[in-house]
Length: 86
Image (tube, rainbow, N blue to C red; front, side, top):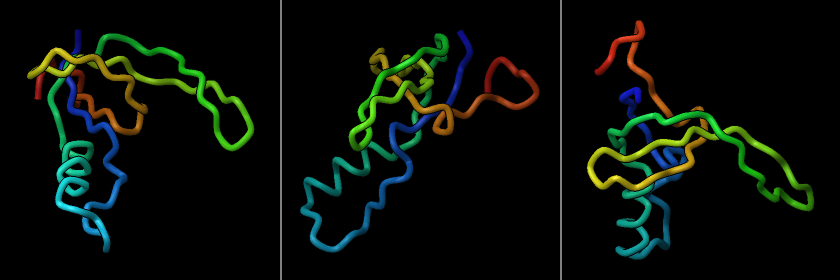
């Protein structure tokens, strides 16, 4: 398995008016960069508006917890020059 860095949703904005302290903590957890291991590419069916769309996701195992995530390709960082690690 290839070591990678990833974020669940780095596009969220943490400092928006009206967020409670719990909301800020939850958002911070979603945008933080994590270390993990890339397993493989997969497909996920999602509903957007009224359409059903098939999208590619990376199956990534978080190094610290062992949790498995389906991550959008843009949110996965691979080491440069095919290095084994960062």
